[in-house]
Image (cartoon, rainbow, N blue to C red; front, top):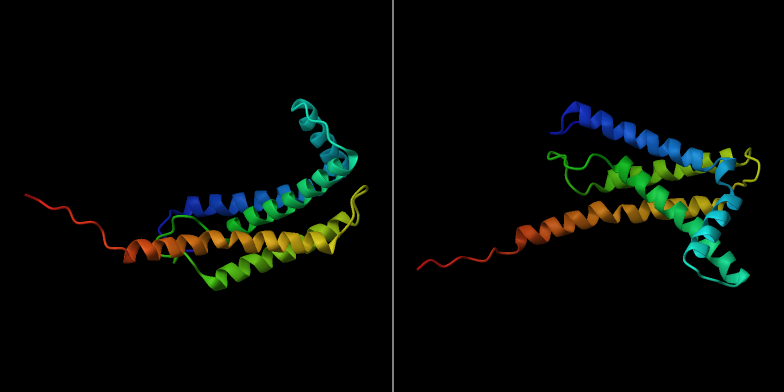
Length: 163
């Protein structure tokens, strides 16, 4: 990737991308099985002095876990999309967005495959779908930035009158 940013910044960005991928892999270990997130949710609710029914707790727990999938893969896709602040690169590149989504989706499949061999975890194509949706939604960020940039460049600036 070439741009106006210095080479060390580019290397740092890709190092962060790889670290995020490693974090996703680590979050798929037995340590972060559903029992862990149930415990965290119970502690948070207790801290907030909230009492809810077991059905509501189960719903919130499932929602929390599924939102985590969307979020972690949205962030991963943004890392894959590339360096912020590159001046030579256009803000919105559809081909790069598609590639970012596909790489995130493929990584999601490998992550779910990994979970087949982790005690207390299971593989789910539904989770792969959520991961891919998260990556796809993340591509709204560079697309929206491009649209804002277009609006700013076509909006006439107010003229200052001098006396």
